Image (cartoon, rainbow, N blue to C red; front, side, top):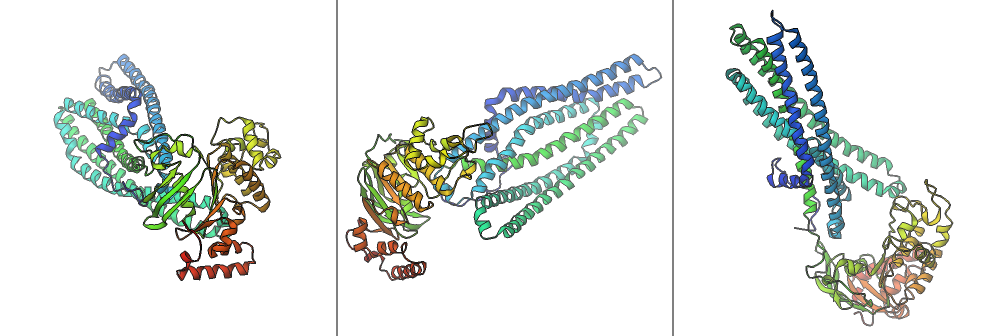
Amino acid sequence: MDHHHADVEPSDVSVFDLPLLLRLAALAVPYKWPLLGALGIMLIVTAAQLTPPWLTKVAIDKCLTPRANPELLTRLVLAYIGVRFLGFAASFVARWLLNIAGQRAILDLRVAFFSHLQRLSLSFYDRRPSGRIISRGTNDVEALNELFTSGLVPAIADLIRLVAIFVLLLRTHVSLTLAVFVVAPLLGLVITVFRKAVRHAFRVCRRKIAVITADLQESIAGLRAIRAFSQEGRRIEHFDELNRDNYRARMDAVRIFARFFPSVDIISAIGLCTVLWYGGHLVLDQRLTVGLLALFMLYLNQFFMPIRNLTHLYSTLQSAMAGAERIFEIIDTTPAIRDADDARVLPTVAGEVSFEGVHFAYDGEPVLRDVSFRVAPGETVALVGPTGAGKTTIVNLLAHMYEPQQGSVKVDGRDVREVTLDSLRGQMGIVLQDPLLFSGSIRDNIAYGRPDAPDEHVREVAAAVGAADFIEARTDAGPQGLDAGYDADVHERGSTLSVGQRQLISFARALLKAPRILILDEATSSVDMQTERLIQDAMRRLLGGRTALVIAHRLSTVINADRIIVLDEGRIVAQGTHSELLESCELYRELYEMQFVEPEDAVALAELSKRRRAGGLAAGRCEGTAQ
Protein backbone atom coordinates (compact mmCIF):
# COMPACT_ATOMS: atom_id res chain seq x y z
CA MET A 1 0.00 0.00 0.00
CA ASP A 2 1.25 3.47 -0.80
CA HIS A 3 2.14 5.20 2.41
CA HIS A 4 2.67 8.63 0.96
CA HIS A 5 -0.47 9.30 -1.01
CA ALA A 6 -2.71 12.17 -0.08
CA ASP A 7 -5.88 11.58 1.81
CA VAL A 8 -8.60 10.67 -0.64
CA GLU A 9 -12.11 9.38 -0.37
CA PRO A 10 -12.44 5.64 -0.89
CA SER A 11 -14.07 4.59 -4.10
CA ASP A 12 -17.78 3.90 -4.08
CA VAL A 13 -18.60 0.72 -2.24
CA SER A 14 -21.50 -1.58 -2.82
CA VAL A 15 -23.93 -1.67 0.08
CA PHE A 16 -23.78 -5.47 -0.16
CA ASP A 17 -19.99 -5.77 -0.37
CA LEU A 18 -19.79 -9.27 1.11
CA PRO A 19 -16.17 -9.15 2.40
CA LEU A 20 -16.87 -5.85 4.11
CA LEU A 21 -20.14 -7.15 5.57
CA LEU A 22 -18.36 -10.24 6.90
CA ARG A 23 -15.69 -8.06 8.43
CA LEU A 24 -18.32 -5.97 10.17
CA ALA A 25 -20.04 -9.13 11.35
CA ALA A 26 -16.73 -10.32 12.80
CA LEU A 27 -16.79 -7.32 15.15
CA ALA A 28 -19.97 -8.70 16.72
CA VAL A 29 -18.79 -12.32 17.02
CA PRO A 30 -17.40 -11.86 20.56
CA TYR A 31 -20.87 -10.69 21.60
CA LYS A 32 -22.88 -13.33 19.73
CA TRP A 33 -24.87 -14.42 22.78
CA PRO A 34 -26.48 -11.02 23.46
CA LEU A 35 -27.13 -10.73 19.71
CA LEU A 36 -28.66 -14.19 19.47
CA GLY A 37 -30.72 -13.45 22.56
CA ALA A 38 -31.95 -10.20 21.01
CA LEU A 39 -32.80 -12.02 17.79
CA GLY A 40 -34.74 -14.72 19.65
CA ILE A 41 -36.69 -12.14 21.62
CA MET A 42 -37.39 -10.20 18.41
CA LEU A 43 -39.17 -13.34 17.18
CA ILE A 44 -41.43 -13.02 20.20
CA VAL A 45 -41.96 -9.36 19.30
CA THR A 46 -42.87 -10.39 15.74
CA ALA A 47 -45.35 -12.98 17.03
CA ALA A 48 -46.84 -10.35 19.34
CA GLN A 49 -47.28 -8.01 16.36
CA LEU A 50 -48.93 -10.67 14.18
CA THR A 51 -51.39 -11.88 16.81
CA PRO A 52 -53.69 -8.79 17.18
CA PRO A 53 -55.00 -8.96 13.58
CA TRP A 54 -56.14 -12.58 14.22
CA LEU A 55 -57.82 -11.49 17.46
CA THR A 56 -59.55 -8.70 15.52
CA LYS A 57 -60.76 -11.18 12.85
CA VAL A 58 -62.17 -13.50 15.49
CA ALA A 59 -63.86 -10.60 17.27
CA ILE A 60 -65.51 -9.40 14.04
CA ASP A 61 -66.62 -12.83 12.84
CA LYS A 62 -67.60 -14.30 16.22
CA CYS A 63 -68.63 -11.37 18.39
CA LEU A 64 -70.15 -8.77 16.04
CA THR A 65 -73.00 -10.99 14.91
CA PRO A 66 -76.59 -11.55 16.08
CA ARG A 67 -75.31 -14.52 18.04
CA ALA A 68 -72.55 -12.50 19.75
CA ASN A 69 -70.65 -13.94 22.70
CA PRO A 70 -69.92 -11.13 25.20
CA GLU A 71 -67.63 -13.34 27.29
CA LEU A 72 -65.54 -14.24 24.21
CA LEU A 73 -65.30 -10.54 23.29
CA THR A 74 -64.02 -9.73 26.79
CA ARG A 75 -61.43 -12.51 26.59
CA LEU A 76 -60.33 -11.33 23.15
CA VAL A 77 -59.94 -7.74 24.38
CA LEU A 78 -57.92 -8.89 27.40
CA ALA A 79 -55.80 -11.11 25.17
CA TYR A 80 -55.23 -8.16 22.81
CA ILE A 81 -54.00 -5.99 25.70
CA GLY A 82 -51.83 -8.82 27.08
CA VAL A 83 -50.19 -9.44 23.69
CA ARG A 84 -49.42 -5.73 23.34
CA PHE A 85 -47.80 -5.62 26.79
CA LEU A 86 -45.81 -8.78 25.96
CA GLY A 87 -44.60 -7.13 22.76
CA PHE A 88 -43.57 -4.00 24.67
CA ALA A 89 -41.60 -5.96 27.29
CA ALA A 90 -39.95 -8.22 24.73
CA SER A 91 -39.01 -5.22 22.54
CA PHE A 92 -37.43 -3.48 25.54
CA VAL A 93 -35.29 -6.52 26.44
CA ALA A 94 -34.30 -7.13 22.82
CA ARG A 95 -33.15 -3.57 22.29
CA TRP A 96 -31.28 -3.62 25.61
CA LEU A 97 -29.36 -6.75 24.60
CA LEU A 98 -28.80 -5.35 21.12
CA ASN A 99 -27.27 -2.16 22.48
CA ILE A 100 -25.04 -4.10 24.88
CA ALA A 101 -23.58 -6.06 21.97
CA GLY A 102 -23.50 -3.08 19.60
CA GLN A 103 -21.87 -0.66 22.01
CA ARG A 104 -19.22 -3.19 22.98
CA ALA A 105 -18.43 -3.92 19.34
CA ILE A 106 -18.12 -0.19 18.65
CA LEU A 107 -15.91 0.18 21.74
CA ASP A 108 -13.59 -2.49 20.34
CA LEU A 109 -13.55 -0.77 16.95
CA ARG A 110 -12.73 2.64 18.41
CA VAL A 111 -9.88 1.19 20.46
CA ALA A 112 -8.55 -0.77 17.47
CA PHE A 113 -8.74 2.35 15.28
CA PHE A 114 -6.95 4.54 17.82
CA SER A 115 -4.36 1.86 18.58
CA HIS A 116 -3.52 1.57 14.89
CA LEU A 117 -3.22 5.34 14.58
CA GLN A 118 -0.58 5.20 17.31
CA ARG A 119 1.42 2.69 15.29
CA LEU A 120 1.23 4.43 11.93
CA SER A 121 4.33 6.21 10.73
CA LEU A 122 4.79 9.96 10.50
CA SER A 123 4.72 9.66 6.71
CA PHE A 124 1.07 8.65 6.99
CA TYR A 125 0.20 11.95 8.66
CA ASP A 126 2.39 14.19 6.51
CA ARG A 127 -0.24 14.73 3.81
CA ARG A 128 -3.47 13.85 5.62
CA PRO A 129 -5.40 16.62 7.37
CA SER A 130 -5.82 15.60 11.00
CA GLY A 131 -9.44 16.76 10.92
CA ARG A 132 -10.30 14.13 8.30
CA ILE A 133 -8.68 11.42 10.39
CA ILE A 134 -10.71 12.64 13.37
CA SER A 135 -13.84 12.52 11.20
CA ARG A 136 -13.18 8.87 10.45
CA GLY A 137 -12.80 8.09 14.13
CA THR A 138 -15.98 9.95 15.07
CA ASN A 139 -18.53 10.39 12.27
CA ASP A 140 -17.74 7.16 10.46
CA VAL A 141 -17.66 5.13 13.65
CA GLU A 142 -20.97 6.71 14.66
CA ALA A 143 -22.49 5.51 11.36
CA LEU A 144 -21.46 1.97 12.30
CA ASN A 145 -22.79 2.52 15.80
CA GLU A 146 -26.22 3.31 14.35
CA LEU A 147 -26.09 0.17 12.24
CA PHE A 148 -25.10 -2.11 15.11
CA THR A 149 -27.45 -0.71 17.73
CA SER A 150 -30.58 0.00 15.71
CA GLY A 151 -30.19 -1.66 12.33
CA LEU A 152 -29.14 -5.25 11.91
CA VAL A 153 -31.28 -7.24 14.36
CA PRO A 154 -34.46 -5.17 13.73
CA ALA A 155 -33.81 -5.68 10.01
CA ILE A 156 -33.65 -9.44 10.49
CA ALA A 157 -36.86 -9.23 12.53
CA ASP A 158 -38.50 -7.20 9.74
CA LEU A 159 -37.48 -9.81 7.15
CA ILE A 160 -38.94 -12.57 9.31
CA ARG A 161 -42.08 -10.48 9.72
CA LEU A 162 -42.41 -10.04 5.95
CA VAL A 163 -42.04 -13.76 5.30
CA ALA A 164 -44.46 -14.65 8.11
CA ILE A 165 -47.10 -12.23 6.84
CA PHE A 166 -46.72 -13.50 3.28
CA VAL A 167 -47.12 -17.12 4.41
CA LEU A 168 -50.14 -16.25 6.57
CA LEU A 169 -51.78 -14.35 3.71
CA LEU A 170 -51.22 -17.24 1.29
CA ARG A 171 -52.66 -19.74 3.74
CA THR A 172 -55.67 -17.49 4.27
CA HIS A 173 -56.59 -16.67 0.66
CA VAL A 174 -54.36 -17.22 -2.36
CA SER A 175 -56.12 -15.04 -4.97
CA LEU A 176 -56.44 -12.10 -2.60
CA THR A 177 -52.74 -12.43 -1.76
CA LEU A 178 -51.79 -12.38 -5.42
CA ALA A 179 -53.86 -9.19 -5.86
CA VAL A 180 -51.57 -7.47 -3.38
CA PHE A 181 -48.56 -8.05 -5.63
CA VAL A 182 -50.02 -6.07 -8.50
CA VAL A 183 -48.06 -3.14 -7.06
CA ALA A 184 -44.79 -5.14 -6.62
CA PRO A 185 -43.15 -3.99 -9.94
CA LEU A 186 -43.90 -0.35 -9.15
CA LEU A 187 -42.51 -0.74 -5.64
CA GLY A 188 -39.36 -2.40 -6.98
CA LEU A 189 -38.80 0.46 -9.45
CA VAL A 190 -39.13 3.11 -6.72
CA ILE A 191 -36.74 1.25 -4.42
CA THR A 192 -34.14 0.84 -7.18
CA VAL A 193 -34.19 4.54 -8.07
CA PHE A 194 -34.01 5.45 -4.38
CA ARG A 195 -31.01 3.20 -3.75
CA LYS A 196 -28.95 4.78 -6.51
CA ALA A 197 -29.84 8.32 -5.50
CA VAL A 198 -29.28 7.87 -1.76
CA ARG A 199 -25.91 6.16 -2.29
CA HIS A 200 -24.55 9.21 -4.07
CA ALA A 201 -26.15 11.61 -1.59
CA PHE A 202 -24.62 9.91 1.43
CA ARG A 203 -21.16 9.81 -0.14
CA VAL A 204 -21.35 13.57 -0.75
CA CYS A 205 -22.63 14.24 2.79
CA ARG A 206 -19.82 12.23 4.34
CA ARG A 207 -17.21 14.11 2.34
CA LYS A 208 -18.68 17.46 3.32
CA ILE A 209 -18.72 16.67 7.04
CA ALA A 210 -15.12 15.43 6.85
CA VAL A 211 -14.07 18.77 5.32
CA ILE A 212 -15.93 20.66 8.05
CA THR A 213 -14.25 18.61 10.77
CA ALA A 214 -10.84 19.24 9.24
CA ASP A 215 -11.48 22.98 8.98
CA LEU A 216 -12.78 23.15 12.55
CA GLN A 217 -9.70 21.36 13.87
CA GLU A 218 -7.41 23.65 11.87
CA SER A 219 -9.20 26.77 13.08
CA ILE A 220 -8.96 25.76 16.73
CA ALA A 221 -5.28 24.80 16.41
CA GLY A 222 -4.50 28.07 14.62
CA LEU A 223 -6.64 30.35 16.78
CA ARG A 224 -3.70 32.45 17.95
CA ALA A 225 -2.55 33.11 14.39
CA ILE A 226 -6.11 33.89 13.30
CA ARG A 227 -6.48 36.49 16.02
CA ALA A 228 -2.98 37.86 15.51
CA PHE A 229 -3.83 38.63 11.88
CA SER A 230 -7.42 39.70 12.63
CA GLN A 231 -8.79 37.02 10.32
CA GLU A 232 -11.73 35.95 12.49
CA GLY A 233 -14.26 37.28 9.99
CA ARG A 234 -12.60 35.57 7.06
CA ARG A 235 -12.49 32.23 8.90
CA ILE A 236 -16.14 32.60 9.87
CA GLU A 237 -17.07 33.27 6.25
CA HIS A 238 -15.06 30.25 5.11
CA PHE A 239 -16.62 28.01 7.76
CA ASP A 240 -20.05 29.35 6.84
CA GLU A 241 -19.40 28.50 3.19
CA LEU A 242 -18.36 24.94 4.09
CA ASN A 243 -21.46 24.52 6.23
CA ARG A 244 -23.67 25.83 3.45
CA ASP A 245 -22.15 23.23 1.14
CA ASN A 246 -22.93 20.62 3.77
CA TYR A 247 -26.44 22.04 4.17
CA ARG A 248 -27.07 21.78 0.42
CA ALA A 249 -25.78 18.20 0.40
CA ARG A 250 -27.99 17.31 3.36
CA MET A 251 -31.01 18.92 1.75
CA ASP A 252 -30.40 16.91 -1.41
CA ALA A 253 -30.56 13.78 0.75
CA VAL A 254 -33.68 15.10 2.50
CA ARG A 255 -35.40 15.67 -0.85
CA ILE A 256 -34.67 12.07 -1.84
CA PHE A 257 -36.24 10.78 1.37
CA ALA A 258 -39.08 13.29 1.11
CA ARG A 259 -39.99 11.86 -2.31
CA PHE A 260 -39.39 8.22 -1.47
CA PHE A 261 -41.46 7.62 1.65
CA PRO A 262 -44.61 9.30 0.28
CA SER A 263 -44.11 7.20 -2.87
CA VAL A 264 -44.07 4.03 -0.77
CA ASP A 265 -47.15 5.25 1.09
CA ILE A 266 -48.97 5.85 -2.23
CA ILE A 267 -48.01 2.37 -3.47
CA SER A 268 -49.13 0.96 -0.13
CA ALA A 269 -52.44 2.79 -0.50
CA ILE A 270 -52.87 1.41 -4.04
CA GLY A 271 -52.26 -2.09 -2.68
CA LEU A 272 -54.78 -1.56 0.12
CA CYS A 273 -57.37 -0.20 -2.30
CA THR A 274 -56.82 -3.17 -4.59
CA VAL A 275 -57.40 -5.59 -1.71
CA LEU A 276 -60.40 -3.58 -0.49
CA TRP A 277 -62.00 -3.53 -3.97
CA TYR A 278 -61.38 -7.17 -4.75
CA GLY A 279 -62.00 -8.38 -1.22
CA GLY A 280 -65.17 -6.29 -0.99
CA HIS A 281 -66.57 -8.08 -4.04
CA LEU A 282 -65.68 -11.41 -2.44
CA VAL A 283 -67.52 -10.38 0.74
CA LEU A 284 -70.56 -9.29 -1.27
CA ASP A 285 -70.49 -12.65 -3.07
CA GLN A 286 -70.23 -14.29 0.38
CA ARG A 287 -66.94 -15.96 -0.57
CA LEU A 288 -65.06 -14.08 2.16
CA THR A 289 -65.99 -12.99 5.67
CA VAL A 290 -65.74 -9.40 6.85
CA GLY A 291 -63.32 -10.50 9.57
CA LEU A 292 -61.06 -12.18 7.03
CA LEU A 293 -61.05 -9.04 4.87
CA ALA A 294 -60.17 -6.99 7.95
CA LEU A 295 -57.36 -9.47 8.70
CA PHE A 296 -56.00 -8.96 5.18
CA MET A 297 -56.16 -5.19 5.48
CA LEU A 298 -54.35 -5.21 8.85
CA TYR A 299 -51.67 -7.64 7.68
CA LEU A 300 -51.20 -5.72 4.47
CA ASN A 301 -50.63 -2.54 6.43
CA GLN A 302 -48.04 -4.39 8.50
CA PHE A 303 -46.53 -5.80 5.31
CA PHE A 304 -45.64 -2.38 3.92
CA MET A 305 -44.26 -1.11 7.23
CA PRO A 306 -41.22 -3.48 7.23
CA ILE A 307 -40.60 -2.49 3.60
CA ARG A 308 -40.39 1.15 4.66
CA ASN A 309 -38.15 0.17 7.58
CA LEU A 310 -35.86 -1.92 5.41
CA THR A 311 -35.58 0.82 2.82
CA HIS A 312 -34.61 3.27 5.54
CA LEU A 313 -32.15 0.67 6.78
CA TYR A 314 -30.66 0.67 3.30
CA SER A 315 -29.58 4.28 3.75
CA THR A 316 -28.21 3.43 7.20
CA LEU A 317 -26.38 0.44 5.78
CA GLN A 318 -25.04 2.48 2.87
CA SER A 319 -23.72 5.12 5.25
CA ALA A 320 -22.25 2.45 7.52
CA MET A 321 -20.59 0.64 4.62
CA ALA A 322 -19.02 3.86 3.36
CA GLY A 323 -17.84 4.59 6.92
CA ALA A 324 -16.55 1.05 7.37
CA GLU A 325 -14.54 1.26 4.16
CA ARG A 326 -12.97 4.54 5.31
CA ILE A 327 -12.17 3.13 8.75
CA PHE A 328 -10.75 -0.15 7.48
CA GLU A 329 -8.76 1.74 4.86
CA ILE A 330 -6.81 3.25 7.75
CA ILE A 331 -6.71 0.08 9.85
CA ASP A 332 -5.39 -1.85 6.84
CA THR A 333 -2.62 0.67 6.21
CA THR A 334 0.65 -1.03 7.02
CA PRO A 335 2.98 1.24 9.02
CA ALA A 336 5.92 2.27 6.87
CA ILE A 337 8.08 2.15 9.99
CA ARG A 338 7.67 -0.98 12.10
CA ASP A 339 9.73 -3.66 13.77
CA ALA A 340 11.35 -6.03 11.31
CA ASP A 341 10.40 -9.68 11.68
CA ASP A 342 13.88 -10.45 13.01
CA ALA A 343 14.29 -7.20 14.98
CA ARG A 344 16.31 -7.55 18.18
CA VAL A 345 16.03 -5.68 21.44
CA LEU A 346 18.70 -3.00 21.61
CA PRO A 347 20.66 -3.45 24.84
CA THR A 348 21.67 -0.49 26.97
CA VAL A 349 23.76 1.65 24.66
CA ALA A 350 26.90 3.65 25.21
CA GLY A 351 25.48 6.31 22.90
CA GLU A 352 27.55 6.16 19.72
CA VAL A 353 25.65 7.53 16.71
CA SER A 354 26.75 7.23 13.09
CA PHE A 355 25.30 8.23 9.73
CA GLU A 356 26.85 6.49 6.74
CA GLY A 357 26.12 7.81 3.24
CA VAL A 358 22.53 8.74 4.09
CA HIS A 359 20.23 10.01 1.34
CA PHE A 360 16.64 10.98 2.12
CA ALA A 361 13.83 12.63 0.18
CA TYR A 362 10.27 13.65 0.98
CA ASP A 363 8.02 12.79 -1.97
CA GLY A 364 10.96 12.84 -4.34
CA GLU A 365 12.38 16.14 -3.04
CA PRO A 366 15.94 15.52 -1.78
CA VAL A 367 16.48 16.63 1.80
CA LEU A 368 19.73 14.87 2.73
CA ARG A 369 22.50 14.09 0.26
CA ASP A 370 25.27 11.64 1.19
CA VAL A 371 25.37 12.66 4.86
CA SER A 372 28.02 10.89 6.94
CA PHE A 373 29.23 11.68 10.45
CA ARG A 374 29.90 9.99 13.78
CA VAL A 375 29.04 11.11 17.29
CA ALA A 376 31.10 9.52 20.06
CA PRO A 377 29.43 8.34 23.29
CA GLY A 378 28.92 11.27 25.63
CA GLU A 379 29.67 13.85 22.92
CA THR A 380 27.42 16.87 22.39
CA VAL A 381 27.05 17.69 18.71
CA ALA A 382 25.11 20.67 17.41
CA LEU A 383 23.44 20.73 13.99
CA VAL A 384 23.13 24.21 12.47
CA GLY A 385 22.22 25.58 9.09
CA PRO A 386 19.59 27.55 7.19
CA THR A 387 15.95 26.52 7.31
CA GLY A 388 15.41 23.42 5.19
CA ALA A 389 19.01 22.26 5.44
CA GLY A 390 17.93 18.86 6.83
CA LYS A 391 18.62 19.22 10.56
CA THR A 392 15.28 17.91 11.85
CA THR A 393 15.32 15.13 9.27
CA ILE A 394 18.57 13.86 10.77
CA VAL A 395 17.10 13.46 14.25
CA ASN A 396 13.91 11.93 12.80
CA LEU A 397 16.04 9.32 11.05
CA LEU A 398 17.98 8.68 14.24
CA ALA A 399 14.74 8.02 16.15
CA HIS A 400 13.64 5.81 13.21
CA MET A 401 10.60 7.96 12.47
CA TYR A 402 11.59 7.64 8.80
CA GLU A 403 13.97 5.41 6.88
CA PRO A 404 16.69 6.63 4.52
CA GLN A 405 16.43 5.77 0.85
CA GLN A 406 20.17 5.06 0.84
CA GLY A 407 22.77 4.58 3.52
CA SER A 408 22.34 3.60 7.15
CA VAL A 409 21.83 5.12 10.58
CA LYS A 410 23.46 3.25 13.45
CA VAL A 411 23.47 3.38 17.24
CA ASP A 412 26.41 1.61 18.86
CA GLY A 413 27.12 0.02 15.50
CA ARG A 414 23.61 -1.46 15.12
CA ASP A 415 21.41 -0.31 12.25
CA VAL A 416 18.26 1.24 13.73
CA ARG A 417 16.21 -0.82 11.24
CA GLU A 418 17.44 -4.02 12.87
CA VAL A 419 16.32 -3.25 16.44
CA THR A 420 12.88 -2.86 17.99
CA LEU A 421 11.42 0.63 18.02
CA ASP A 422 10.61 0.51 21.74
CA SER A 423 14.12 -0.48 22.75
CA LEU A 424 15.59 2.25 20.52
CA ARG A 425 13.31 5.12 21.43
CA GLY A 426 13.17 4.03 25.05
CA GLN A 427 16.82 5.08 25.36
CA MET A 428 16.23 8.48 23.79
CA GLY A 429 14.94 11.69 25.25
CA ILE A 430 13.48 14.20 22.80
CA VAL A 431 12.57 17.84 23.36
CA LEU A 432 10.78 19.50 20.45
CA GLN A 433 10.51 23.12 19.40
CA ASP A 434 6.77 23.17 20.08
CA PRO A 435 6.40 21.78 23.61
CA LEU A 436 3.28 19.63 23.76
CA LEU A 437 1.73 18.96 27.16
CA PHE A 438 -1.23 16.71 27.76
CA SER A 439 -4.30 17.36 29.87
CA GLY A 440 -3.59 16.43 33.46
CA SER A 441 -1.29 17.54 36.23
CA ILE A 442 2.23 18.93 35.92
CA ARG A 443 3.51 15.78 37.61
CA ASP A 444 1.75 13.57 35.05
CA ASN A 445 3.38 15.49 32.22
CA ILE A 446 6.88 15.33 33.68
CA ALA A 447 6.47 11.60 34.35
CA TYR A 448 4.88 10.96 30.94
CA GLY A 449 7.75 8.72 29.82
CA ARG A 450 8.01 7.04 33.25
CA PRO A 451 4.53 7.00 34.83
CA ASP A 452 5.81 4.99 37.80
CA ALA A 453 8.59 7.45 38.65
CA PRO A 454 8.72 8.39 42.35
CA ASP A 455 7.67 11.92 43.24
CA GLU A 456 11.17 12.75 44.49
CA HIS A 457 12.61 12.00 41.06
CA VAL A 458 10.01 14.23 39.43
CA ARG A 459 10.97 17.06 41.77
CA GLU A 460 14.68 16.48 41.18
CA VAL A 461 14.49 16.82 37.39
CA ALA A 462 12.15 19.81 37.70
CA ALA A 463 14.69 21.50 39.96
CA ALA A 464 17.54 20.52 37.63
CA VAL A 465 16.03 22.38 34.67
CA GLY A 466 14.90 25.35 36.75
CA ALA A 467 11.18 24.51 36.63
CA ALA A 468 10.68 23.82 40.33
CA ASP A 469 10.37 27.48 41.30
CA PHE A 470 7.40 28.33 39.10
CA ILE A 471 5.77 24.94 39.68
CA GLU A 472 5.87 25.18 43.46
CA ALA A 473 4.73 28.79 43.31
CA ARG A 474 1.42 27.84 41.68
CA THR A 475 -1.53 28.30 44.02
CA ASP A 476 -4.46 27.30 41.83
CA ALA A 477 -5.67 24.12 43.52
CA GLY A 478 -7.87 21.86 41.46
CA PRO A 479 -11.65 21.44 41.83
CA GLN A 480 -11.20 18.33 43.96
CA GLY A 481 -9.10 20.19 46.47
CA LEU A 482 -5.82 18.90 45.10
CA ASP A 483 -2.68 20.60 46.22
CA ALA A 484 -1.27 23.18 43.89
CA GLY A 485 2.20 22.91 42.42
CA TYR A 486 2.88 19.51 40.87
CA ASP A 487 -0.82 18.56 41.15
CA ALA A 488 -1.98 21.66 39.29
CA ASP A 489 -3.87 20.92 36.08
CA VAL A 490 -2.20 22.28 32.94
CA HIS A 491 -5.40 21.85 30.86
CA GLU A 492 -5.37 21.03 27.16
CA ARG A 493 -1.95 21.56 25.51
CA GLY A 494 -0.72 23.27 28.69
CA SER A 495 -2.82 26.39 28.13
CA THR A 496 -2.34 27.57 31.73
CA LEU A 497 1.44 27.81 31.28
CA SER A 498 3.65 30.12 29.28
CA VAL A 499 5.60 28.76 26.31
CA GLY A 500 8.82 28.89 28.30
CA GLN A 501 7.27 27.06 31.23
CA ARG A 502 5.92 24.36 28.92
CA GLN A 503 9.38 23.96 27.42
CA LEU A 504 10.97 23.55 30.83
CA ILE A 505 8.45 20.84 31.72
CA SER A 506 9.13 19.04 28.45
CA PHE A 507 12.84 19.27 29.26
CA ALA A 508 12.23 17.72 32.66
CA ARG A 509 10.09 15.03 31.00
CA ALA A 510 12.94 14.04 28.69
CA LEU A 511 15.52 14.02 31.45
CA LEU A 512 13.39 11.88 33.78
CA LYS A 513 13.77 9.01 31.30
CA ALA A 514 17.53 9.10 31.98
CA PRO A 515 18.13 8.74 28.24
CA ARG A 516 21.43 7.57 26.82
CA ILE A 517 20.86 9.83 23.80
CA LEU A 518 19.28 13.25 24.15
CA ILE A 519 17.80 15.08 21.14
CA LEU A 520 17.03 18.77 21.44
CA ASP A 521 15.19 20.06 18.36
CA GLU A 522 15.11 23.86 18.65
CA ALA A 523 14.47 23.23 22.34
CA THR A 524 15.33 26.76 23.47
CA SER A 525 13.85 28.75 20.59
CA SER A 526 10.64 29.47 22.54
CA VAL A 527 12.18 30.60 25.82
CA ASP A 528 13.51 33.93 26.96
CA MET A 529 17.17 34.60 27.65
CA GLN A 530 16.84 34.02 31.40
CA THR A 531 15.10 30.66 30.89
CA GLU A 532 17.65 29.76 28.25
CA ARG A 533 20.45 30.30 30.75
CA LEU A 534 18.64 28.03 33.22
CA ILE A 535 18.45 25.30 30.59
CA GLN A 536 22.08 25.72 29.59
CA ASP A 537 23.15 25.42 33.22
CA ALA A 538 21.02 22.29 33.59
CA MET A 539 22.44 20.83 30.38
CA ARG A 540 25.99 21.25 31.57
CA ARG A 541 25.15 19.28 34.73
CA LEU A 542 22.97 16.62 33.17
CA LEU A 543 24.55 15.89 29.78
CA GLY A 544 27.61 14.35 31.33
CA GLY A 545 27.91 10.80 30.03
CA ARG A 546 25.05 11.23 27.53
CA THR A 547 25.22 11.65 23.80
CA ALA A 548 23.38 14.78 22.69
CA LEU A 549 22.30 16.08 19.29
CA VAL A 550 21.25 19.71 19.51
CA ILE A 551 19.46 21.56 16.71
CA ALA A 552 19.46 25.32 17.12
CA HIS A 553 18.95 28.45 15.10
CA ARG A 554 19.94 30.43 18.19
CA LEU A 555 23.67 29.73 17.99
CA SER A 556 24.32 31.08 21.47
CA THR A 557 22.91 27.80 22.77
CA VAL A 558 25.49 25.64 20.93
CA ILE A 559 28.67 27.65 21.38
CA ASN A 560 29.88 25.21 24.04
CA ALA A 561 29.03 22.06 22.07
CA ASP A 562 31.91 19.60 21.62
CA ARG A 563 31.40 19.82 17.89
CA ILE A 564 29.17 21.76 15.50
CA ILE A 565 28.05 20.33 12.16
CA VAL A 566 27.02 22.89 9.53
CA LEU A 567 24.44 21.77 6.97
CA ASP A 568 23.37 23.51 3.80
CA GLU A 569 21.01 22.17 1.13
CA GLY A 570 21.11 18.67 2.62
CA ARG A 571 24.89 18.36 2.78
CA ILE A 572 27.45 18.71 5.55
CA VAL A 573 29.61 21.64 4.51
CA ALA A 574 31.73 21.98 7.64
CA GLN A 575 32.22 20.76 11.17
CA GLY A 576 34.32 21.84 14.10
CA THR A 577 34.18 23.91 17.27
CA HIS A 578 32.56 27.31 17.43
CA SER A 579 35.84 29.18 17.22
CA GLU A 580 37.11 27.00 14.38
CA LEU A 581 33.99 27.52 12.31
CA LEU A 582 34.02 31.28 12.83
CA GLU A 583 37.43 31.28 11.19
CA SER A 584 36.86 28.70 8.46
CA CYS A 585 33.16 28.69 7.47
CA GLU A 586 31.54 31.77 5.96
CA LEU A 587 28.01 30.28 6.20
CA TYR A 588 28.41 29.63 9.93
CA ARG A 589 29.85 33.11 10.46
CA GLU A 590 26.87 34.66 8.64
CA LEU A 591 24.39 32.65 10.72
CA TYR A 592 26.16 33.69 13.89
CA GLU A 593 26.45 37.37 13.00
CA MET A 594 22.78 37.67 12.05
CA GLN A 595 21.84 37.08 15.67
CA PHE A 596 24.02 39.84 17.09
CA VAL A 597 23.56 42.74 14.68
CA GLU A 598 20.87 45.32 14.17
CA PRO A 599 17.75 44.12 12.35
CA GLU A 600 18.44 46.07 9.19
CA ASP A 601 21.97 44.64 9.01
CA ALA A 602 20.60 41.14 9.56
CA VAL A 603 18.34 41.59 6.54
CA ALA A 604 21.28 42.68 4.43
CA LEU A 605 23.33 39.69 5.57
CA ALA A 606 20.47 37.35 4.79
CA GLU A 607 20.15 38.78 1.26
CA LEU A 608 23.89 38.45 0.73
CA SER A 609 23.80 34.84 1.91
CA LYS A 610 20.91 34.11 -0.43
CA ARG A 611 22.74 35.58 -3.42
CA ARG A 612 25.87 33.63 -2.63
CA ARG A 613 23.98 30.34 -2.41
CA ALA A 614 22.21 31.12 -5.68
CA GLY A 615 25.64 31.63 -7.22
CA GLY A 616 26.66 28.10 -6.33
CA LEU A 617 29.13 29.11 -3.66
CA ALA A 618 27.48 27.25 -0.77
CA ALA A 619 29.56 24.09 -0.92
CA GLY A 620 32.84 25.90 -1.38
CA ARG A 621 32.74 28.60 1.22
CA CYS A 622 33.67 26.46 4.22
CA GLU A 623 37.24 25.34 4.62
CA GLY A 624 38.35 22.25 6.42
CA THR A 625 36.80 18.79 6.57
CA ALA A 626 33.12 18.64 5.78
CA GLN A 627 32.67 14.95 6.39
